[in-house]
Image (cartoon, rainbow, N blue to C red; front, top):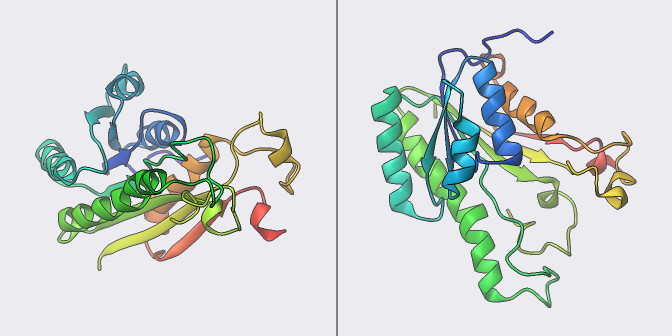
Length: 223
């Protein structure tokens, strides 16, 4: 049984919180006592996650727009008075049907990097500014595509008191039978598996952990 309140009274911002992994992290943090502000470029998805929860609220944001980050942290600091956790989760896989190197257009490359790299940079920049005096935790969600060879995903695979951690998630789709055959544990993970990893890194249990890369992939990267 998990001990409740592992992020009790902590204030968290989670980007891309409207679905999948971001949604699972938001709900997990809320279950453990955090006040959560999710952001998403799709306001409808974000509102659906926040609906009925007194611990989760939603803010419309495009992570590629610097002024959106400035407004977000201004809003969060006015709402919470301090920010303890930032989870840079927002990401896109592709904007076109192929990401083989020879098929990847410069337009697609820039679109993916603007979200997955520049968005994370902006989050870290303004997250550090907001947490410099009070301390906190920044968790950058990534993928095992950044660790193992992923030639079919060329654009996607490039990817103080404040603790820095990177969380690399493996396949979480039961529909991808071809991928499940590559997982030593024999089954796909879930968004909740990734959320539990993020919860640990954000909690006081990880107070002396920084600079780590936590891989949650069922063993894919060890074979």
